[in-house]
Length: 129
Image 1 (tube, rainbow, N blue to C red):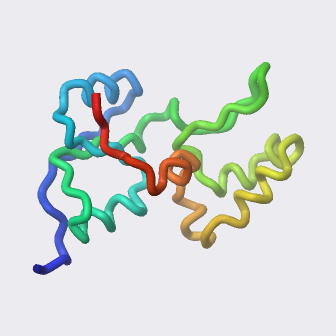
Image 2 (spheres, one colour; image 1 turned 90 degrees about the vertical axis):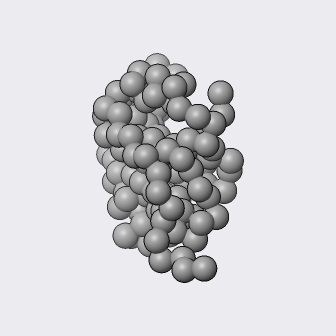
């Protein structure tokens, strides 16, 4: 079997979290949630995962960024590891987190890899209602 092409799937790119949640509610149980896609795209190409639909969250601005809150620090799931490593607040108050982010993978991966993707890596990423 040739493994140089991904199986066909429908691609959705919602622009708000509310739209994404509604879309996932409406799709079948073989939907795949993706942001950066570093691991997902390889799985699709190797046909290890065969979603009927992919919901790309990368366009949802509310899932990006680092904010200080009354309880500590809020890091959006789509925030890159480089952003975490270089953020002045993280460097000042959470230096261990900045240091750890600097040690993950290569600079190229850190520039695009997200904190959410790294936390979810190797977990069951299929969306089930």
